[in-house]
Length: 388
Image (cartoon, rainbow, N blue to C red; front, side):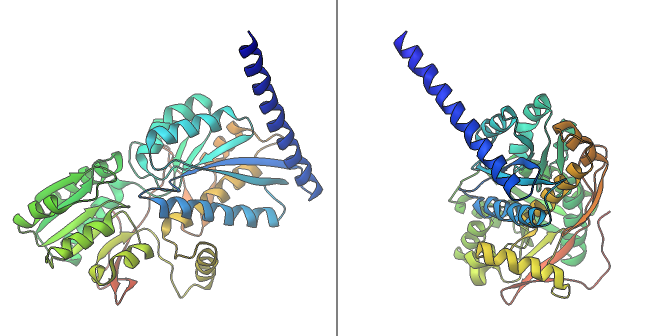
């Protein structure tokens, strides 16, 4: 009985402490001229293989919140972000999602990074009736899993066909490809869509191999790929691309390399050096040096992060603005349901371009071909291409 009383007292003390802290945040916001506060949960892999992207989420979302708060907040409320490290693990992500759902102060969730994490969280947010807006999930199955699931990256059934038709077939002009991909929900979806599209354009996949997350030694898989004599190798992943590239080159194989997944990651170039020279990839967005506003955003992000942004933190930035716009469209009371309903119907043009959700809760993107030349990413042209 004494132990039970002690536990109950401890729980009461913790809850009172959280309540007090919450009141302090509200009072501090009101002292700054806001009506109060609105909290948004942010999920991403702050540690582990995909940490570059999770850290990018954290910085990109905070940049947006800072700008919104400097302009008076969202409907007069100060936005407060609550970032959590999912480690890129679906179970960890789901545990954190439940915590967000149980916290009445959290009005929406931005994240997670991988499709697998987002799909694991879908039934949880559906039950709690709270938005999960992912900057990057691209598995075509994800957004349709719940009315509360959204994504702005575009879908693999759009990007993978673009890759097969325009990069592999038209731009590179090759007929035989070897593929190495991560065995995850995202990787399997990307591979399935690429496989179908490659067949349609007459590209033969002479070998395909896969690996699990956090794999370090790819030598046996690369040996198998090399034995099939492909004209090029396609790597489908985000976190392990640099390791695969370096191991391909360390084995003395000078095969052309392409990658679907990491976007225009500067860290990828930093980790591979000359090994990534000539690398080809797809991206839905590129920081065009001819557009001052984009370069200003890029420079601000770099100042805060100490690395150049990919499309991923830019999408995270846009997600906060989308939620803020949905809050502005709410009536007298801001609710989780109101945010969901306004998010679904609103249109928005952000850093990454125009965003309008379809009935499933995701969007259609167009794509660019980029290459690494002289240690920098450049957009490749030479023929007209667009996502179909």
